[in-house]
Length: 490
Ligand code: ADP
Ligand code: LRH
Image 1 (cartoon, rainbow, N blue to C red):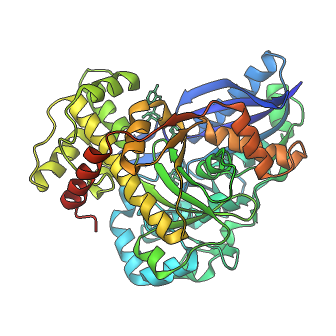
Image 2 (cartoon, rainbow, N blue to C red; image 1 turned 180 degrees about the vertical axis):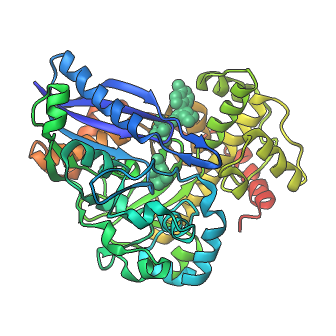
C-alpha cells in the first residue's frame, strides 16, 4: 500500500507525516520529527535551510529503510520567508528569519511612503512588520549583495521543492502572505515592487495548490536510492493547509489554527477589501480551491515557547504539560495584556517583556512560572474572543462554535478557556491539521478524493474531535471587560 508524504514545517518544529486512506479513514503516522531552531549570527537571525533539507532527505531515507512506498510528496511551512537563487541556480545565503530586526524601522518608512490604503487595497493583507514586503525593502535599502545577485525568489517550501525537483515555482497560498501579491489581478503587484525598487521578475510564476510540479530529480534519486516520486505544490502555507483540514461540514465556519501563531477567522469566497477590514487590520490569505482566509494573526503560543526558553536558559526546564499544570494551579485573572503588543514580537527575554508590559499598565507583574503561563493563556483566550467577534462582523456571520486545530490543542486548558471566553463550544482536532491538509490536496490532485468537502468529511470521520462546552460564563464575561479596559482595545 502506498502513502503520501507531508513535510510540514512549523516555526517551532517540523515533521514528516505518512498518510493513507484505508476503510474510509485516514491513517496517519509520524515518520520523522525534529526541532526547528533559528540561528543567530551577530545581530542577524536565520533559518538553517540546509538542515531542513537534510531532515527532508532523512525522512525519505527512513521511509525507504522501512520499505514504505511513497506515491507523492507535498511541503508546507510558516508564511512570509524566502530564499534567493543566483544566476547559477544556487541558494544565495541562508534565508532570514521573519523575526530578524532589520525590518523594524523600514516597516514604518515603507507604510508611510506607499501608504496604508494603497498597500491594503492592492493586497488585502494584515499589516505586520514580519511580512516579506518589508524584508525585501530592508534588503534593498541596505544594498544587500544577495538581492543584487538574485535571479529568483522562492518561498521556503518552494525552495525545498526546487532542491528536490529542480523546478522553480512559487505557490498561491504562500505568495499571498508576502503582502506583494494582488488577489484581484491574481498576480504579483507591479506597483508595490516599483515602490520598493525590487525587480518583480525574480518572483516568477505562481502555481495553484494541487499542481504537480515535477518529480524527485536524478541527483536525489541517486544519492538516496529512491524512485522518481511526484512532488505537488500543496497549500504550501501551513495555515492554508491547516484550514483545508478543518473538519467543518458547512461552508460558514470559524477556525483557530493554534501553534507558534494563532490564526483565527473564517473561509470566504473572495477577499474582503472593505475599509472596515483595513481598519480592523484583518488579512485575506489565499486558500485552496478559490477560497480566501479572512483572519487575524495573533502572537500565539510564541509567548509561552519563549518563556519556556528563557527559564531553560536560567537552568529550569519544563515540559508543556508541566507548564499547563502550573497554570491550572495559579490565581485566575491576575493581569491583563494584549498579546499582540510590539514588546512581544522579538524580546530578548519574554518573562521580562511581560514584566515591562505590567509596569507600563500599572499592574502587578507575575512572580512565578504558573502565573506567567496562566496570564498568557487567559489573555490569548480573550484576544480570540475579540478577533472572533470582529470576524463575525466582517463576514456578516454568526458562528455556532470554533474549530481548533494544531499543536496548541494539546493544551486542554487553552481549549477550555477559549470556550469560556467566547461563550461557545470549541471543537478541538485534529492536532496535525497542517500535515493532514497537505495530504488532502495531494489526494484531491491525484483523484483519490473528489473535492475539499469530501476531504473535510473524511477528516471528521478519521480523527477524534474533543468538545469543550463553555463554563463559568459570568466570571469570564466580567474579566473580558477588564481585559478591554486594561488593554485599551476598542
Ligand atoms: P508550529 O507548527 O508553529 O511549530 P505546533 O502546531 O507544533 O506549532 O504547536 C506548538 C505548540 O503546541 C507549542 O508552542 C506548545 O504550546 C503546544 N504543545 C505542544 N505539545 C504540547 C503538549 N503536550 N501539551 C500542551 N501543549 C503542547
Ligand atoms: C503560522 C504562520 C502564520 C504566519 C506566520 C509567519 O505558522 O504561517 O500564518 O504566516 O507563520
